[in-house]
Amino acid sequence: MTIKGVTDEDLKALLAENLTPSDTIKTPERLFGREKNLRTIDRALSSPGRQIFIYGDRGVGKTSLALTSAYLHSATLSPPIHVMCGRTSGFAQVVQAIGNALIPVEDRVEKPGGGGGFNLTLPGLGGVGVSRASKAVPAIAAPQSLNEALDVIRYVASKRNGKTIIIIDEMERIETAAEREKFAEFIKNIPELGADVRFIFCGIAHDVDELLQSHPSAGRILETIHLERLKHNYLWQILMVVAERLGVELQLETLIRISQVSDGFPHYVHLIGESLFWSMFDDPEVVTKSGAPHFKAGIEGALQRTEATLRAQYDKATQKYRNTADYQEALWALADSTSDRRQIADIYENSYKWIVTKRVGRTLMPRDKLNQRYLSLRKDTHGRIVAGHGAGWFSFRENIMRGYVRLRAEAEGINLGRHHNTAGME
Image 1 (tube, rainbow, N blue to C red):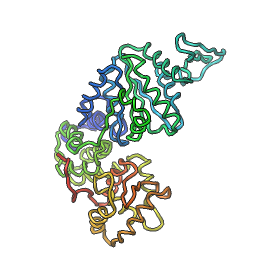
Image 2 (cartoon, rainbow, N blue to C red; image 1 turned 90 degrees about the horizontal axis):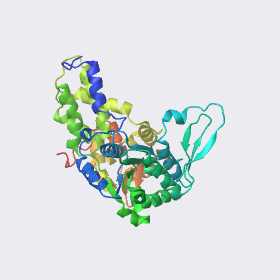
Image 3 (tube, rainbow, N blue to C red; image 1 turned 30 degrees about the horizontal axis):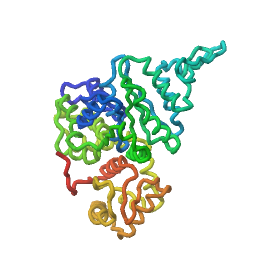
Image 4 (cartoon, one colour; image 1 turned 60 degrees about the vertical axis):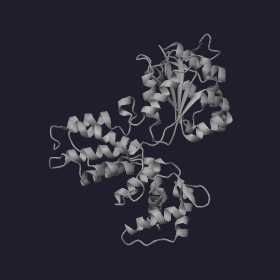
């Protein structure tokens, strides 16, 4: 339409290639700001017996780093095996899923026909069986012991060419101590599988801390990588690649505001960027540079398409019969800094007061009343969106929520973070 030389199909293809808020990244050229992490993983995977544990906030890009690293170290005919943990699945089910990755998905999900079935025990697998249904649909049985679990992995490796890279994702979803203990015992024994099998685990800081505290010997096996939120210049690169391909310019103010709103989470940059570029494309005038209306459209589009659970948590925290504005302003004030934990005095003096001056018809609450609002936001009735740390210290229970809160504030004309120190933007 009005980006010179760019058709609707051109823009769709370019955005699908570079901005993927609902998909993971699997190639290093799109993994901005993670070169050091990729290098660390590369060197660790060249060390016999070394496994990888990537940890960090939800939404910071752990899966993308894991997949990119895994594809770089996998043979073309043996792509990485990627399995997810779940609240209702345990260690045995995760190992079973690794084994079933050998079996075409259509064979596993199609309805079996008639004719009766039988069980086949694979030789050398210590009793781990491959069962065949009436349509000869195979499936790896869930292991009943550590040895059986190791045998499943040996069997998988024997059927693949070259190095086998296995990603076990979302370890934080394993809730019971007993199941976590099984994973810990398994990790200690991974080196017994040989050099052709490597694991990349993904979880949060609690997972790796608990593992290393209860099993210090795992520290000799695991290369732990703390994945931090991206600095502003790397967030800008995500958008500038698209802008350069389109032949348009993004204003510095637009880049600064997007990186501040996103709070270091690339997911939000992808969301805002998609809507921003479509707004530029739909502009009735020929566009060569982004403007305020395009940025506003980017924010509004990101809010409409953001993760439903974040939106539901925010609404549960704030949408009350009374005091809705109080709770919104409390959350905005908490999100006005990149500090993970903030003290009530700092929040009140340096953020809350400033926010209220920007709001028509609003008056300041006393500091003790603001503190009470945060105490309420810790409760189930408010979605437990905030965590308390004693003596008036508060944080978001999940840091990714801070980015969503910034999106909501921006949509209401409150540009958080601009009156604070902007270190880390370069």
